[in-house]
Image (cartoon, rainbow, N blue to C red; front, side, top):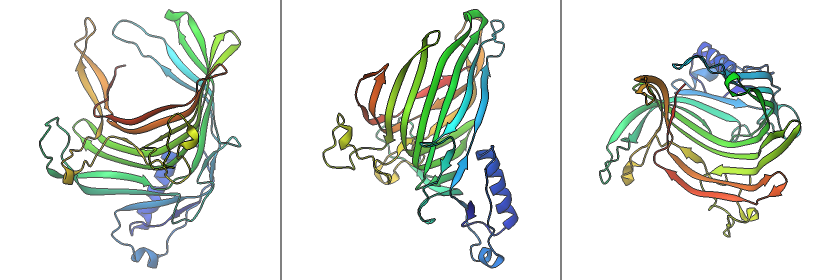
Length: 340
């Protein structure tokens, strides 16, 4: 069920926005309904900056027969290679549907997504001018925030297939099971710049398992498993005796216990002299490094990171390698360039 909690006063705009959102976010079939506010209720909330949507007891069954990426013709001739993910199915801890706010509490405390466009005061962007204080600037951005979220979503991929006539034909790379993704809170900010966008993503995420079953020989698979993964800000909020080597001391209970992992920083901290350092996404033309190429189209990502990642167990073909911790991550620059 969807319930509109706060909207602009134009009911037609609200219903159209909600319909477009549902179509984009949930392209498969789901049983949903909308409850419109009465005119007198709308009159009392004129001037709101955005839309709030409450999600309750949503169950989605999704099956994808085949998802294939094919390499196009390139500057050196034809390239007929492809990577195909087959028999993809969503699941949760007990069944074969994706669940969103299935264990729903009070409507004022969970399951609400806030959409807004606002003009924020932020610190000027990081420019590597160390020792200089940031200036205060205005930045228009969109915000999507769910302070308390509840979901159970996983994906099973039955076959991972690589095909290339130049590399021995079709090869079965095995299967994968990813999830359950227990996303407990998230915030997403975006703003335009030049030929791309600035963004920040903050979230607390817990994953039951990332399992890859690779084919060693025909019909024989071995598995690599990373189990009980926790991604957030820090594990220092917890029981006072936190030991990275002992998962029983980790504070991972429900309720945004470990804070949020951060990708990019849209705001900085003007009061304390810290510049903003947003993550960026750009589509651009770059000078090529391959012989005969002067330019190539590319996608560039810059992903500053801050937070901690822990996993309770790594298991390789039945051998338990124990837990692992990557604490206090702070990457000021993480540059990724993708060239077709």
